[in-house]
Amino acid sequence: MRILVEPSDYPALRNLGDIAMQQTAVGRIANFWPTADIRVFTESPQSLPVYAPNVQGMSNIGRKAWMSGILPQRGVPHYIRHWERRFRSRHLQLGRRLAKYNLKLRSNRRTTALTGFLEAVQTTDLLVVCGMGGITDTFEQYALDLLDTIALVKENGKAFVAMLGQGFGPIDDRTFLAERAREILPLVDFIALREPRASLPLLKRMNVDLSHVNVTGDDALGIASRGRGSVLGNCLGINLRMASYSNVTIEFLTQLRQVILPFARARGVTLRPLPSSLYIEEADSNSIAGLTEGYERICIGNVTEPETLTRQVRDCRIAIVGSYHAGVYALAQGVTIVGLYNSDYYRDKFLGLEALFGVGVFPVDLSVPDWTTNLIIKANEAWDTAPACRLPLIEAADRQIESGWKAYNKLRALVDSRFGRV
Image 1: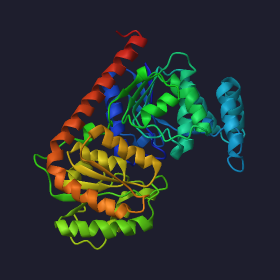
Image 2: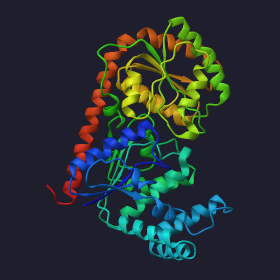
Image 3: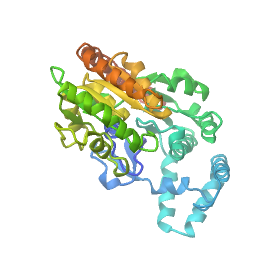
Image 4: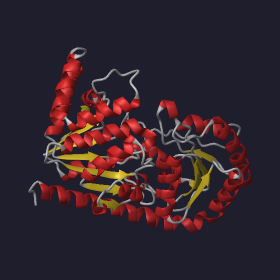
């Protein structure tokens, strides 16, 4: 059996949430099918972690060559690119010939990679899309490429497609992405959601058969829950995501510092940075450093992998976070969070966590005029109620981890049944 895995590592996997989700998905799949040929799309095959002897990296060069199409890379309007994408998806054989001819004029290496990619999707039995929040207007180009990959794989007439640990949206129903999602998402055989609040209604609008959909919680929870302390800590965890998709700017950072540092001094606590993104262009460590500047008691730590992030979280009483997976790591340890959001993308993430966990999640909308007052109120409430929330949070995380295992076992049964292995 040939299995392709989509890990969402554009350009390289440097997010500790994505790493944990990939470890979970690839590890379980390799264990389920130890004799399968498993290939993981990656920008750097030589750097792919060693998951199992039958797991190898597959360069993204060929797929990017296909997705780039046959038009020039610059100066072409979006609507023409969308037309070209639709044309290639509906006339695959002609699209393949045109793409190969186009590349031969420029790069034999990319032509060879394109041929390898197209041969791989034609022979794939199972495509697994690891946990992510990638099908969204926020990352339109990536979402379109992923949907086109699914369509290509399904074109071979035998492949089973599973999307695991997914958060969908937001997607404007009037966009080209929504059009493609309505065409392709109903072809997916199995979907496991990390949150139902926003994703389920969206999938229904995209004409997905909801009997194919399971709600499991985030695939990172299992790794994030390891090594829980026996008692609640007394530190304040801090995370902030400054990126285009979070819509948190330097002005917000300054205002947040003016609220959070007095709160921390009044409580007499040590701050613990909780960076979950290590990408240079959006490194949480940089925004956290700006947020905590001038504070006297900071336990920096050296967060470079999921295990070191769980150690930082373990000693916290609450965490004030501006990124989704920093929140997931905290909640998995029974640590209450205050979730900061200023975009629809992060609103859905934090309200989704609130819906899943029930207690111990205090979302704060930074777009409303009195958000600083709301933050002070919710931070104090989170601190005061944290001891009572710890056990319910742990129980909720464990239920979601168990749901995740059930979904993976269901996937194994469905795939084995499809390919006559039962």
